[in-house]
Structure formats: C-alpha cells, structure tokens
Image (cartoon, rainbow over all chains, first blue to last red; front, side, top):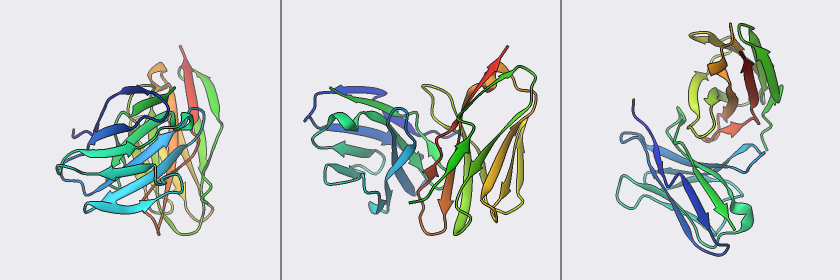
Amino acid sequence: EPEVTQTPSHQVTQMGQEVILRCVPISNHLYFYWYRQILGQKVEFLVSFYNNEISEKSEIFDDQFSVERPDGSNFTLKIRSTKLEDSAMYFCASNEEGVFGQGTRLTVV
Amino acid sequence: ILNVEQSPQSLHVQEGDSTNFTCSFPSSNFYALHWYRWETAKSPEALFVMTLNGDEKKKGRISATLNTKEGYSYLYIKGSQPEDSATYLCAFRSGSARQLTFGSGTQLTVLP
C-alpha cells in the first residue's frame, strides 16, 4: 500500500536555528498538507500545497514557515528561526483521503 | 473557526466489551468526515471517509454512522480487543476548504 514517508522521525534543535522537515508523498497525489500537533492539543492545519504553490494556509503559518517541492518528489517544511513553542509533532498528508506520514517530532531547546 | 468535538476524552473498557464514541461537527457546509486510528509512534491510519447523510460504514469490528443534519458521527467497536487500544480521531472537511479540522481524539484502552 502506498505510503507517505517523513524524515527525520525526531529532530532536536536549538532555539533560533532553522529546520527542514521532509516528506515524500504518494507519487500520483496532487494535494499535500502539513499539520502539527503540540503535545496535549488538537492536530492543527498549517498549509496545503497544489501545483507547486500554496493553496491555503492557516494563521499559524506565518513568515517563519515556508514549503516547497524542490525536486518534484520531496515536499519540505522549513521553519526559519525556531521558537520553543514550535515543538510539536509535524505531519505530512497527501490528498483529500488524508493519508498521513508517521510524523516528525520536533523539539526546540 | 470550526469546532469539532469528540467525547469521551478517554475510555477504558474490558476485552470483549463493545464501545462507541462521538464526534460532533458543524452541520452547515459539510463535505466529509474522516475517522482515524492513531497508535503512538505510527502514522494516523485512515478508517473511514464519510460523505453522505445516513452513511454507515464498516471495517471488521469497527463501524461508523453519520448524521450531517445534526452534525454528529458515531464510531462503534464491537467486541473490543487489546489491539484496538489507540487514539481515535475524527476530522471534518467543509465544502469551502480542503484541509481537515480535527477533534481532540478519544483515547481508548482495552484491558485484557
């Protein structure tokens, strides 16, 4: 069964550093999403991506965040200057059926 | 802001018991309701995508119903097994956006 894969599974970073979270979505899917879950809170939508551009984004997705699909397969989420409150599980998802990757746990220290 | 609520927050049942949980969502501008099963350190596993009022879907011992007019969905597990222990998430999609709005989940523990 096709899968969405994410790397790394865990990332620890210093506050203020940049991180890039990577996702390989299912190859024939067209829409890609990033969600996050801060510990103890609901899963929150960050951004959707279609046809190599942002389709929709939430209030959380400010200038600190960016997404791109650099090589037609990988789908990345960049956080430019991480803050403590960015610590969360970040999920990539593919298409409206909502096939999720296993997540990247980001810890900002 | 869309409000998606799940109850109960957590649930402990004995092996063999049947159980159910609730997801409530906005009754207007409905497009789809998703149910996921999420085990720690794994990706959320899609159980059902429900789109039609009155829909009832079944996967093994798990089934779900949908009432879009009143804005709720029930997930049923018949004869719970320890391997059913997980967090069950529902997620609402409106007709005007593609992203999902999640409930907070119901954490199910099935005791042997």
